[in-house]
Image 1: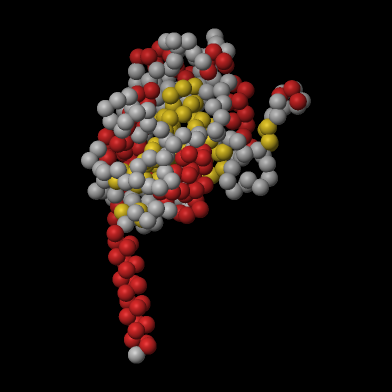
Image 2 (image 1 turned 60 degrees about the horizontal axis):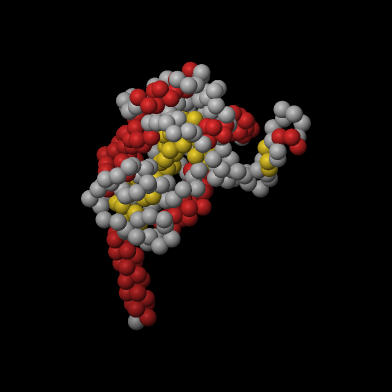
Length: 337
């Protein structure tokens, strides 16, 4: 009799767990924006508005305790949210969402999306970049240049951060992202075209393109040729690709996702809305605090470009979910970066 009761109890527990699992939203792709300027539609767009218009305009907001913004999900299994700017806001929001019982993230692909700055030697305004490496700019030792031998680096890594100061994102997934998006026609603006001509570097003066490289995560808005060179030095020191984009969240969010789901299904997607240093005719402070009419322009076009590029990957994954739900497929020609 006791055996029968135990069997019934186990059956009930199994049925409850199965029901609970079925009741969760199975997230195929999660899109993370970091800030929105106002509303999700009908005003000046921030990082999330065009994602919202593409995927979530008919979705109801899902409140998540501990997250900066509501989560939106469509019927195809694509979800997204505004996580907040900077490492703490964004990573704490991501943690709250990942641990919320409303969602099943067991097979999810993550796109960490936003704007950033680019060194003029590597990129230009309205570029869209896929991250091959994510590096935390802040984890280490720094000192003032005058307190070190002239011309020597003013940064060195601090021991104990080896596992969280850099992440190489899945090269096969990166190859898929580049292949699916590299031929997309990117938007541009007259103001951005004029602004680029203030710079002498060939890459700074060209039309926007889809690129890839190291995304440097720092809570500090670092500017100027000296700190840009330091970011490149750190990328080389860590054996990563060239530094091509400065941003404030991706390495921190990746640390949170990694604890629960690993890093194989993470993509970092950034659009360049400024250069990380001034042109030859302005100081770093003038670049940081430009006079009226001296800003880069092209912001609206860049946030549209991010979604144009990212949507090609999101849509491919969803349409081909039968294959992608089991993990990142082999890239067709076996080439990875």
